[in-house]
Length: 379
Ligand code: CTP
Ligand code: MG
Figure (spheres, protein in one colour):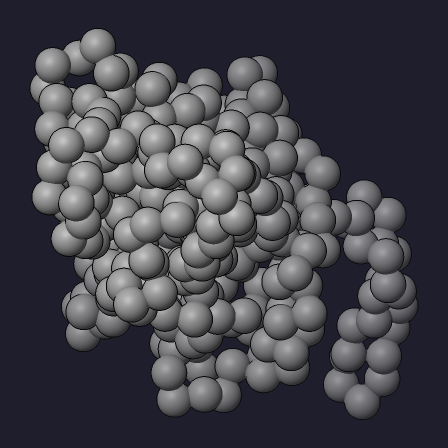
């Protein structure tokens, strides 16, 4: 089922006790809100409306830099006010997922369960059975409350958009729902329960942050890809390698600029995300890639990673040739790759080796490049 998402991030995070609202704080290397946006993009959200306070727009834009298919909507005075504003931005979708920005560890598996349940109901929510004994304080006494049949509702919550819009239209103005399923329940719609998950915890109190830092590792998976490319030398006055032109008494022959370093690296990234190889995306038979700068191929592969909710962790390229000598140009190559991939320099490595005069590289018939890329993807 196709779906859009609304992520509410217009609260002030007063219980979390920090000056910066919790959704903008750093969690294991990136803003809390970015976790959810990347994961929902990776789970196939067609578009995402992020609902924020007007004064937080610039912060939100910085937090989501480089990610596709999102837009901002203005927050309301209450959570449900924010949801209503976000729903307007989701117009036209069949299904909508409504999610708290403060729950960073949503996964594609959670989303798949919700969408499946939505085939037979108006709403679906992840819920956990209450496992602790419940106490109610009445004056200076406490009583024990039966917990049978009680569930803790989490987000994302999934709805058929038409049903949710009409239920919200019928909700009384003088009261405030504590989640969106409550609105469907009141309108008489069916809400299905899907398996909740401790990973869907909501960052609420200061002590939730250290706990979330520890969970962060469990919500991402590292994937590795490798690439290999070789090009033949021809008559010319220089070669392109890793996005840098180096003067030489030969050139490299190829359909594009024959930058074997960028080609190997592009294949490594595509390999890490199971997206075939460079020829699938840029067929050598297609005249539009004749003489093309291979930067385009690399940036395309990076965009695919980001569209799946992932990010590059590091890359490592090895160039195999007798000449030109690579060492004087290594730093420039690293810098160019870091720039193209938007990575810090220490996550980009370029190395070189000869083959001691053996084989095609040794005879200087051509040169080769190998590359490895590591990406972090949502589980
Ligand atoms: N939220 C919102 N608009 C509001 C209030 C809350 O978009 N007017 C969002 C929050 O940003 C959060 C989610 O709703 O992602 C769940 O709310 P909660 O955990 O209560 O967050 P805050 O309201 O920000 O925190 P607190 O209640 O501690 O102030
Ligand atoms: Mg609140």
